[in-house]
Length: 453
Image 1 (tube, helix red, strand yellow):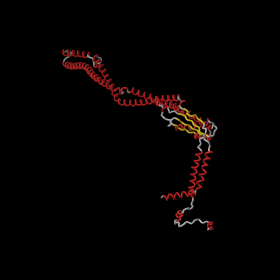
Image 2: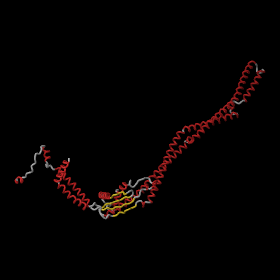
Image 3: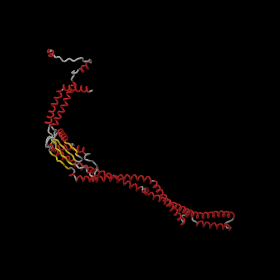
Image 4: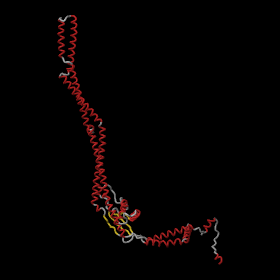
C-alpha cells in the first residue's frame, strides 16, 4: 500500500512539473495585482458616533405599571435599523446635505438615497448603547453626513414615544366613550327590567311566600264570612216570603168556602156574612204585607245585602291579588336568570370601562413623563467626528489575497491543462488503450541522433 501512495505522489509531482509554468505565472502575477488593487482603490473614511438610549420606562421597576407595553432595546433593534435606513430619513438627510433638490431627477435621487442607505450602519453595544457609523470618500463629508443622519434619527426616536402616547390616548379616549355608552345602556336595561318585574325579583321570594300565606288566610276568613252573610240574607228574605204565602193560602181557602156557602145560602145568611168578614180581614192584612219587590226596601234586608256585596268584592280582590302573586312566583326563575345574565353583562362592561379608564390615565401619565424627560432620553457618548485615516483594508491583506488567489488560479489551470492533455506518457496508459502488453521501450530517435549514430 505504501508503494501505491508513493506511485500516486510520483505521478502528481510529474504532473506538477509538466504544468509548472501554469502554476508559477499566476502565483507571481496575482500578488502584484492585489497590491495594485489595494493601492489604487478609493479611500474610504469612517465617522462614528455612539449614544446611550436608556431602557424603556417599562423596564424601570417603579414605573413598570405605567406602560402599555413591555419591550427592550434589543427587541426593537431591527425596528430602529429599519427606521434609520428608511427613505424618509435618508431623503431628508440628502436634502439637508445638498446632495439632492426638488429638481433632481427621480432616478438620480433614488441612486443617491440608496447610496446613503448603504453607507450607514447601526450596531448595538450591550443593552443600551447604539453605535452609528457612516462611510464616505472624505473625512469631512462623512462627518457632515453622520451629523445630519444622527440628528434626524435621534429626533425620530424621541418623537416616536410621544406620537405613540398621543395615538394611544386618542384611541383609548374613543374606546372609553363607546364603553361608557354601552355601560349606561346595560345599566338602564337592568334597572328597567327590575322595575318591570319588581314583584318577581329574587330578593322578593320570601316576602312573596309570606304574602301568599297571608292572602290564603284572609280569603278563608272572608269566604266564611260571606257564607254567613248569605245565609242571613236568605233568612231575611225567607221569613217574609213564608208569611205572605200563608196569607195567600188562607185567602184562597176562605174564598173556596165562601163559594160553597153562596151556593147553598144567600148573602144575608150569617155564615156567609161571617165568611165575608174573615175574608176581608185577611185581604186587608195581605195588603198591609209588602210585596217581594218591596222586601228589598227593608232596612234589615239592605244591611244583609250590603254585607254580602262587600264581602264578595273583598273576596274578588283577594283572588285577583292571589292570581297576580301566583304569576309573579311562577316567573321568579325566569326573572332570576335574566337578571343574572344582565348583571354579568353589566359587570363585564363596567370592568372593561374601568380598565380602559386606568389605561387612559397611564397613557396620559406616560406621555407627560416622556415630555418631562425628553431631553434626557438620549445621551450622546461620542459626538460625530471625522476620521483622520482611511479605513480601507491594509496592503498586506491584499498581498495575501493575491498570493492565495494566484495559487488557486494556478492550480486550477494546471489541473485543467492536465485533464485536457491527451498525450501518452506512460506504458500502462498505452497497454490500457491497445489491450496488449508492452514488451519494450525504444527511446525516441531523431534524424540528428540517427546521423550521429
